[in-house]
Image (cartoon, rainbow, N blue to C red; front, side, top):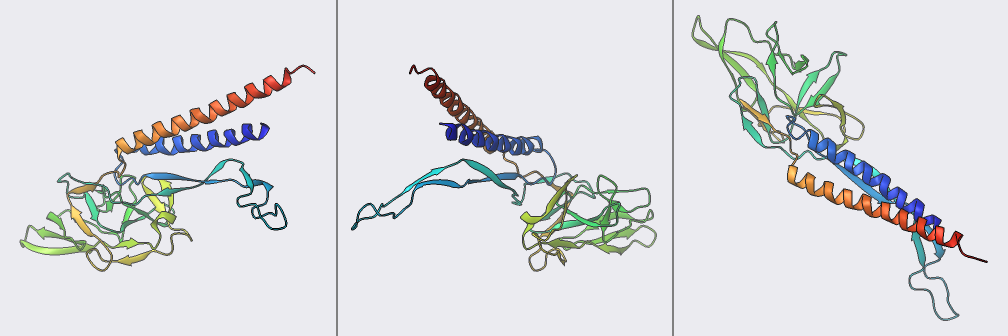
Length: 262
């Protein structure tokens, strides 16, 4: 019965992790470019009370054995990089990647980090930056003497010179992909860092090879489906309650044993 207490406790602990992950997903249902998390679990070691295929006589063996599980633990939290819905905003510097790829951002430490959140803006020097003011990589500057900035599907940034009424090229947006995007390290602020698990970034031009298109005037929404999260939340809550009930029942049985008269 003591085993049951500890086993049910691991279940409650794991379901608490599940609820934490689901809560974070729900909290970010309106976060642009957010990718939902999924908690993954695995069973713990087993206590072997009788070996499988152990001999029960000279001519027969035990067909199953007696292996008692000792509970569950969380084995990982995986990002789901399924593309979110695209929302039309008509803002010039709102960009969405239709397909695979990540924008490159230079953080204040000079390191390159990655994001699917294409809600870009222009700073006081004309540079394209994200919401935190971090520069888009490669750096693209919009002069103050141009109009009608256009970003093509392949990431080419052009504008019209009002003096000569001619089109000028201002830069080229480059995006990257990873062999294992789920291995990226989340940093917050919708940013990710490469890791050994993700592999090295593979740079390329939008609309070529494995890379998606750049859609100007659109933004990628979170890929969290609120209905699915609510169902998962109810399931986790019921599992938590069931494990709690197992602890209560085991405690009642132990109390009964302690009250037995000799």
